[in-house]
Length: 200
Image 1 (spheres, rainbow, N blue to C red):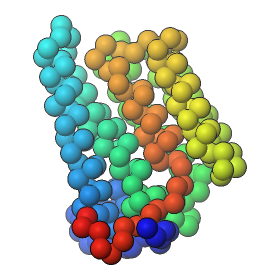
Image 2: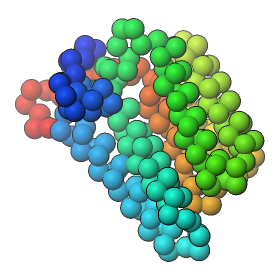
Image 3: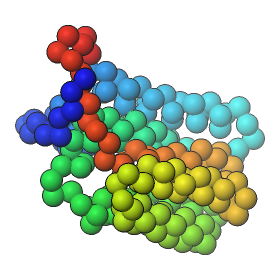
């Protein structure tokens, strides 16, 4: 295994937009690992909705499915070698990472609006905690960031379990969101590349 921090340039056209999302140069294996769970997650959510007494509207089902696709796929995508090279390339610092994370406030807003009875305290607490945790992780020395990220996710799990109980049908959302952002995205882990002989 080799370590290569230099991302290839994105391709042209729609393929280039995909590259900018998951990182240029993703292997077939990385792309399968991203796409398959992202597609399966909304189906599992739909099965759960239909097998319980959740009385979701069509809009709630669509919003929940989109969130499941994005967050589940994002956990995997942000942890790949391609994403590590791309999102931690030169010029991507604290401001860029915090901007990326702040954009996910939309996810929290959607959950508060459509599933939590417009509970703005839910939105405010989780959004403030997400930004604070991300900022503290970025401020930590590099060798401590993985441990700090795990602590950040652990505290989010406690919030989800005891302080702000999970929304019915969306119990997975907070754990998955914080896994995606604090663990998968923020950590600049070494981007190992496969050997030339590797089949994938």
